[in-house]
Image 1 (cartoon, rainbow, N blue to C red):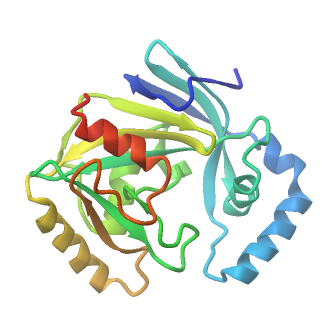
Image 2: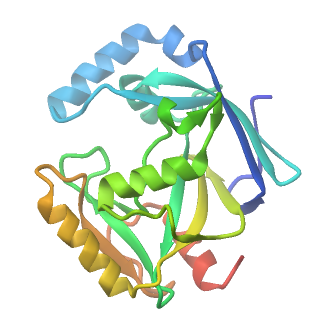
Length: 238
């Protein structure tokens, strides 16, 4: 199957059938020494890094409004080596965004803290898929979205209204699967709640919220994949 999906276009997605293969990812299996050497460099530059477990794709395709793929649990050190060389054949990254829409139709994103890999960058609260995000081997995208938003912002989106379907944008840096989650409160109120949560954390993952009020209101540090998502939202797409 490998990787077969349109790039640089927002795709409607009715189903996500990405399964966790219990076997090792070929990239991790074949690059043990390079992974270890790169991890020593990464942790020397940023001792706060933790070699936890994430997942890395070995296949993904788009057919009949569905994403179908296979992934493997890998160490974060493996992901970091891949991240520095994204053109590796047979390995790609997928992640999810809960596109947080406030009651005034503004978007609420976050800016990552200085000790994180994406220090200072702005995107919707998110994190890589982890083995805990899978149910009987099948990824639960909304569980990942809700978990990551709660961990980073303190917001609980479990009861929030959700868009009727997912969307996906695949680029050279990976594939983001996203869905609107709507809050009744205004963007300023949502931002205040996030800021209050961050203030209680000993070592918060984020610096704080970033409110985006229009497609022309783009903050410094915005991750490249975010611009088309923001334009899509404010164009009223659904």
